[in-house]
Length: 276
Image (cartoon, rainbow, N blue to C red; front, side, top):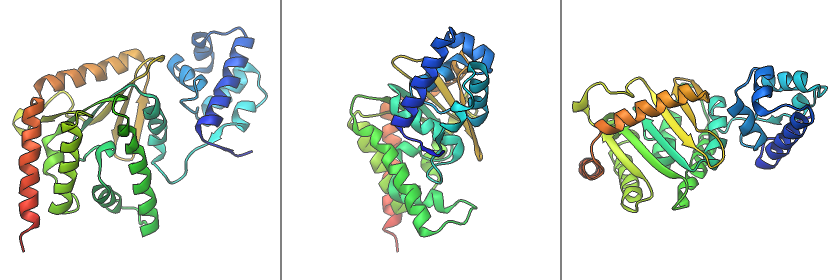
């Protein structure tokens, strides 16, 4: 039976898991040990914020004696809208109260304009039709509506200077992209800091990381490399990512300095776009 993956189906799934766990007399921690899953993961599933993998669902079935229920009613993933490894993060973002992200090469998806996002998808080695690219871009822009709520989530971005200087989709698109970021900063919707080239190596040099906090659940971290990503839930691993982020933030340019650099580069791109 195919169950559509949406907030309602995840919530029903989570409620069933909680009911059967409590009926078996297990705490979340006890179930996590028996099912070889983290307690945080189980807490997010019960809250309707995560979907387990098929393997996780099979273990839940076995431990709780559910007769295959958790596999049969596992909500189906979004196909083709986001990378498989990112689908989990897409859901978590919706419930986060605080998001802190670091980007080393490209503008983070939450901040991308249509032209910039389109160029990113078109650069993929996988052949995509115009319709497929349009669908992917639309999904990314819908995701960015998260920032339409002025107060939540609180968002902070750390950008390597390379993100600002890499010309994606041409000077005109870069000018538009940086102007969009400036509007978000000036409206105080986001905090943004730049890690300059002159800093050299820093605590986050090894790759992308995103940190998320929630009202009623432990924080998580998301790390990503080429064609792969992973949500980290173990407190020690999340804490290490937080410490690396904080260390890098301490070495970054101030908010006003970062904004001044972005403004200067936007003017350079605007000038280049007007050249014959």
